[in-house]
Image 1 (cartoon, rainbow, N blue to C red):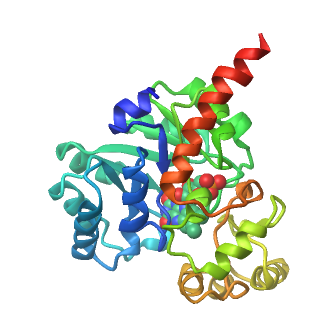
Image 2 (cartoon, rainbow, N blue to C red; image 1 turned 120 degrees about the vertical axis):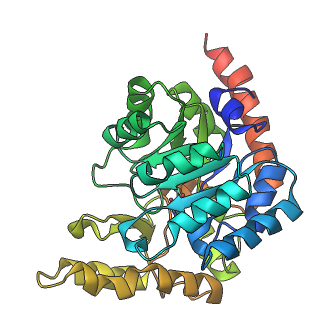
Length: 322
Ligand SMILES: Cc1cc2nc3c(=O)[nH]c(=O)nc-3n(C[C@H](O)[C@H](O)[C@H](O)COP(=O)(O)O)c2cc1C
């Protein structure tokens, strides 16, 4: 496959495994890159810049293909040494960075100097245009369906992807709700140059998520996610479970503050539960496309299926329409 995204990222297929805190480590990213997509490791999964360097080196020991690093710039990550991560990304000659959660402006000069391409993840056309004006190389547009932070506008991919593709001149990659070749082909038809996926790669063999939670998610339907934190302008799409019902009740109470919710929905809690397998104990980020997922393939199997089915969809199903 050849699109502006494959050219920009130096990969065979326009498929990116988006950064997922705690999940996106060497094993997962290398498996995706080895299969022809772009694997991405998550910087803030690592405690500091030197730990990120070791994770990059570990990834290199597992693949000779390009892979990227996710830099999540959420206000909640205020104490994180982003400058240190950017320095290591440059020193280690990482070809591409995925920025998300806040403006990449402060870091763009340093990243450009080291020749690193920047894909910025935005949840609105307005923010995507802003990122383009700052000089990023591509935008990932993340629709309402997505796991994690969909923003507050509630515009799903079917509208958001073509709206972004129309407004921007740089390549747009589609994220949110994509779990199979139908999503990839649809995203291309909507004007995207490729796709970025979280939930689908969370549910693969190389993902470190505990088996008990993988099983629970594979059984989940498209209606089994919800948004928490919405009232405080910080919506997060998560899997419905006992802890999330508790959090929603707390959120609905008039006197509750955002701070009160964090012990229930915060990353510290879900990262611990992802390791222990306590499927009802935390608010796990999860996208609506979980309803399309009913297996736990290896990344190689998954990506080979994407390629085979995308080809069949385009050459047979779509070609037969006319
Ligand atoms: C468990 C999990 C953790 C995530 N953590 C992050 C993160 O740390 N930084 C980030 O930019 N996005 C994060 N995301 C969002 C993904 O990068 C991606 O934007 C999203 O999953 C796309 O939607 P999809 O799940 O429908 O494919 C996370 C998603 C999941 C499922």
